[in-house]
Length: 379
Ligand code: ADP
Ligand code: MG
Image: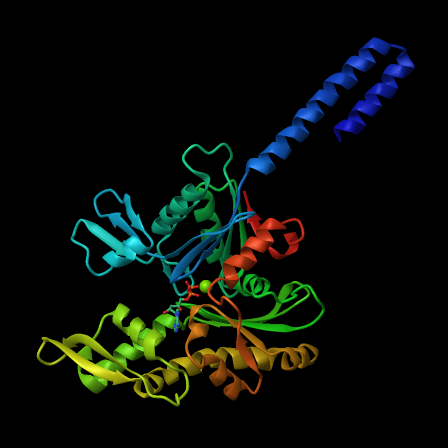
């Protein structure tokens, strides 16, 4: 635009015969243009691009050109008096259920979306600060991923929280698309791929083709609900109350989606429901398998729902290529086997299942021009 302007002025100056004025104008405009280009280039070079997987259970941070720089539980401890952030991540998780009155340790994300806006913003500010340092020259561009099934209000809340936390530009990407890119699936090809991301708060199944989500379904049931199912089972069968972290430990250590050939066991402690006193018991993996079956079937129901709604051409591609699983809960022992048995489509867990979403978001952030159509943005 500026060049065009200079040319027009230059042409008029030629007609009127005022040569010195013409050069002066060109020089002044050219300097302006140069300053403008240099400004944009330095800003873009110095402006960091950050990708954040804001999960219910874990928050992962990826910096373009650098890679993964943080992987912490999504837990924040704030002081009750002035809402100052006291601890974030691992340190805050240790405080969960153990805080005095002056401290509140909480999980700001629930079922895949922001449940506590202010705490989420404080946490984002903490992670962004960790990347850019204290004396930032330019505010960074930040991309957050959200479940494909989240509402417009939830999307706006995520964008607003990111901007309020110090981003110059905020971008959003659908989690299944990010997970597929991070799992190394060629999402831009005219061929259907199915990805199932099973995290802590929500499970999402989606069919992706030509760089976009074609069909998706989600359910707010995932790892946390599996832990609750184990807690319910222990309460009903063994009259024992155990905490969230114990239930998660049982699931990770001896849990299996299908019957295992070699039975495993674990000794756990909790509080007796009748006498109110601490007690220990030993539980077997086959008990866990029974306890979590109903919850696993709810997750598998979502995958079946997507398969039913998939257009026939894409369904044929999926049968050829199989289902790719990502997210922490997909690493539950034998979950891929159960999904294969229930759907009749071969399923396998992606490499580094817990990192797929953040890696995919990072890849999109590094090549934002290519992916403009797939992201939502605000500045
Ligand atoms: P989110 O994206 O919601 O933060 P993640 O993808 O980080 O969730 O996965 C976290 C969930 O994965 C937790 O519920 C955790 O208990 C579960 N998880 C992690 N490792 C395992 C494992 N080996 N077996 C079963 N569940 C697991
Ligand atoms: Mg996740």
